[in-house]
Image 1 (tube, helix red, strand yellow):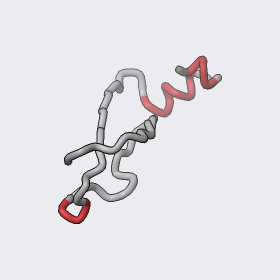
Image 2 (cartoon, rainbow, N blue to C red):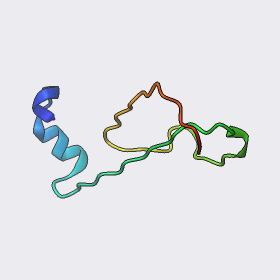
Image 3 (cartoon, rainbow, N blue to C red):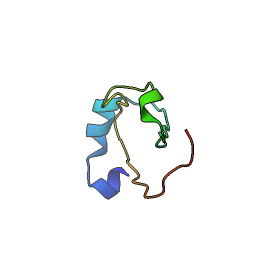
Image 4 (cartoon, rainbow, N blue to C red):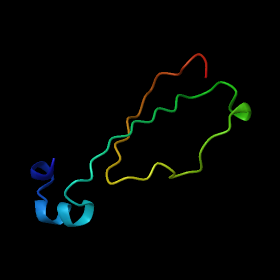
Length: 62
């Protein structure tokens, strides 16, 4: 990924460290009754890299 982004690997190591590796995947499907949902605040999924996938299909249930 560093090569594709044309970023100096040293910069990434300085920013994240040599041994820090983790992966977290969150999926928040739409709910037909949003007034009943308790969720996170905006931008609560912090991390070094965020990839958003826009879906155009609606879910039938929560």
